Length: 512
Image 1 (cartoon, rainbow, N blue to C red):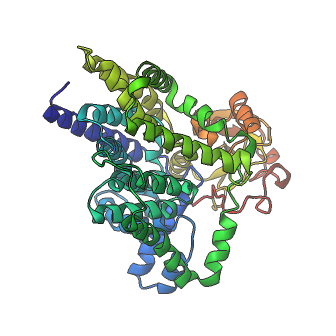
Image 2: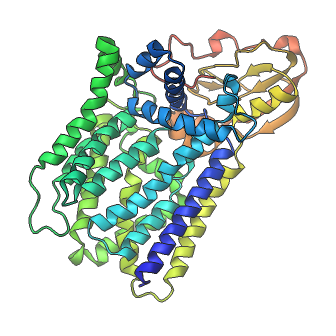
Image 3: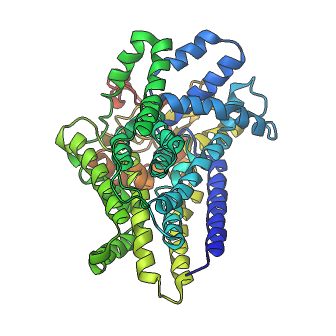
């Protein structure tokens, strides 16, 4: 086993490399592609409203319940984003376009939480009783996880909420009351950072009752944790009620019923299908190692590993119950993400058990890192529709807009068409998908793969039928010089679109 000092140096190296990769990914673009990303702008609006003394607007934002704590965090990060933007060509925020142009900086700041999750996986293993070697393997697996990587380019609350939950698990086993109080606060805030992680709250509570590694008996109900939990969960509700009144609770009730894009029936299978696509070969190998360790060392599986497995079963069970079982919430790729840190801590134990006497343990680490880079590489080759639009607007002017599929929510740029002989097709997130329609006749001037061609993105609301349509048909982003400009309207006809009247409430792939 490597010495503790060596373990720490390698951990720091893992965190540094992980941060560098994530910041590079964020600065490459891709923001405002997924549905929850425009919600980050609420934090920017909150900061700007408060800074300008527009208190009515600030109160309105504080009175909205959707991922409320994420808006608070966005308001904290906004001055940092603006400060960084001053070192670029987008520092003048009197032009709203510069705010959106500096979105990569905001994503880079949020990426810090993605890296923090790797460190928290390490701390979770250590707090549960693992030695440095086992915890280091868990951190390496978390750093190598594609699922925990590629969201870092987007302005999403998932990593932040996951950080709060993991911090709650880490601190719950502490002997210090202030740590257990903080654990409860973090657990309560998890829901308000991202409402879709409601199922993590009871899991955090259950973990707080677990017997700590150094304690001889199981812990009883902890008043410090409960006080923190009530505070973390209740404070945002209080703020929302103060500023939103009865309307806050009406929106909260309605918003909880909007998790319905997709199929309830595939709730039991979607997490595994998504993770198989996202983690690829590394994921299969990890599952094999875990299964092998549980079988070979079944007589001496540590209590902490049994506890991880209970958390895994609890998370999966709650997801299946509320989706396939009760038909309340559809599952998405993002819903499955909290399973990954738990697989990493179990995997850390399994890899440690198999390699503890292996003379070339670093070779195993290099294999893990190599497979991770194979999974990461495609993300650096992606170009996103918003970035394509920006370049076309700057060089050619605004063309017509079109889609090669029918039934989508269609939000073209709110700008007059100045190049009617050109049409830009599929420059957006394609949802929902009713049928394939094809492209208009003309000369293709530019063709760039739509990010939805990357299969894991197709698990953010699409049904199995829609995923099949996306995979079997051409959804490339194309700029076409029309053979007959008069035959193509500025926008697709209404009967080819998913109208606002039909759009699920709370689902927004809107354009800024």
